[in-house]
Image (cartoon, rainbow, N blue to C red):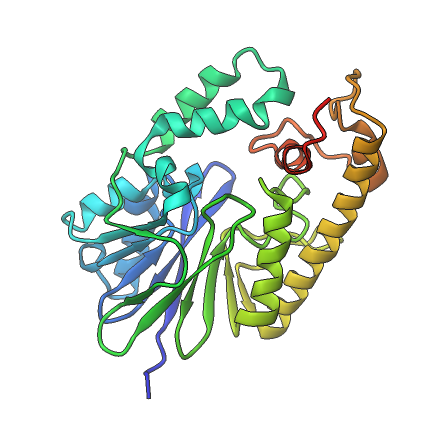
Length: 313
């Protein structure tokens, strides 16, 4: 029988927030997600030392998706392993690991279209320089369906769960069904109070796969996503909490979808509202958060619906 593999959350500082990675204590140790440039040295290394482990011994860097706060520390972590760790990412998000510019283009072609910030591009360029430790070629590209050996009898199954990003994946520890999903289960969103996904249809389908097929025994989230009353979940959810978070995420997506479709059916109109041109959708949902606060999930999701259903005027 496969021995139980221990999972340890690693919290790295980032302003008023913490960034979460997870250490899989396998014969070939793995870290899931890497925070930003400073995270490996300032968060991961001392946390591992406290566990009696060394960052130099990490042999796998498993990236759940390509966003800056998940891949920003990848190059720095890879360097600390003596460049021996295998770096894994889905092929659809690989450009975000290879190129700082890919993050800027994502902003410009998506949420940046609605933020009307003349300094937006420059801010994105500065952010990529500050928090991405280096451009890096992955050593393993996945599409979903792969099995990765972490030594001994420990294996990880890779599942494609697109929606939050095109290349979002779940890593599942076989035999104990511990599931790492990064930001693919948004519930009510994080600090912005709104769920963010680039493709709403894929997002919903992926949530259903997680709920009905993968059925996590434990679900590990990339951030403390929020319940309906604004209380944050932890980042480690048991089976019951995982099912609740998945179902809430599906229910919220349905509410958002209904509001957006109604908004699109009446045509998009610019206004003085900070939610323009999606002000009717925000009103229908009772959303009063700041839609300009990066990473601006409100506009990311609105643009996702608009793009998918091709309702551009």
